[in-house]
Image (tube, rainbow, N blue to C red; front, side, top):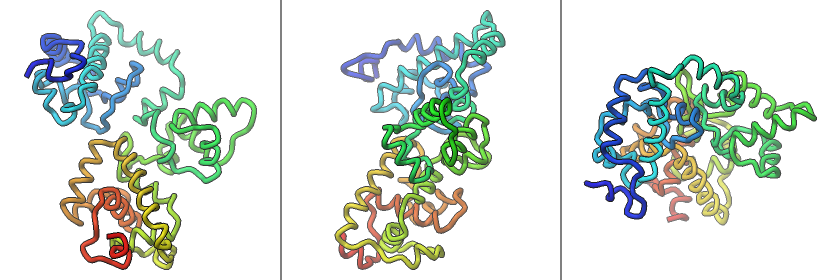
Amino acid sequence: MNESTFSANEPLPFSSKDWDRLRFVLQDSILVDTSLNKLAIDFGMKWPIRGPEETPRKYIGYSLEALADLPEFFGKENRLPILYSILTETQSMDDPFYSMADQFEEVAKQEDDTVKAFRELEIPPDFPIAFVNLSPGTRTLCSTEKITELHQLVDFSKRCAKSIHLVGDLHSLVNALLQGNRETLHQFLPLRKGQSGLFLAECLGQYTTQLSPPEAATLLQFYKRPTTRQAWAEARPLPKNQIPAFLEGIKEAVQQCFGFFPDQAQQLRHAVASGDSQSVRFFASIEDADVENLCIAMAMAALDRKPQSKSILGRFLS
């Protein structure tokens, strides 16, 4: 494989020799096990892959040709220049003639408190508002102000705080973020106990709060998932004429979520294809069997899976 294979229209801005030189230098770097997401934010960039294993060490063991064949890069040529840029900046910070302590101190003085909070909590600033657990009133506010990403909501709240006193969930979310209060943030964002970053299972779990009892009942009955939650168990499914549009909306929302967690989404696809036990295991971290079952139904709807034993809904939609 040669470099022209990576992108027929736009060759890589660095050579195999450049890559080999960089990865050799980084082998002994003190930053080799640092999160690529953290490093990218420090340098004003964005690393598109999430997960605790996403560090420089994961990639510097590969030649450029082998790197391009990895699932993380194959068919996604734009990720290679991003990785190279992040690692180049990382190497410059790790230079023995570079005063790390002085640099970090200077950055800390100039760094906006919001950026610092996102970096320390490993929360992507561009996380979609659609998957933040907010009250209906705050969602209406976001729609009115055309706020679609988390950092926009935080910036908006900071601007408003200069003239009005914020209350409710918006006040709680922003305060928890700036104070690094993970316990409170867990109410709003798909965090996981004892781990950094955001997670797909918890993201879908929180999204279930936006579903009405009839909508939840529709999914649970269609995919024959049990529930002990009274509101869902007693609710009647949506009218037949509303079901196709509802399922299409669920598919669109879950696919958007997949796009933000590409690696975890692939794990979920494999789990759903492997059977019920693997699907249950994927969502076990939610620690709520009713929500886990509804998430499984949402995932199956998004992946166009049909129930083995067709219900009335199944016969209607087949």
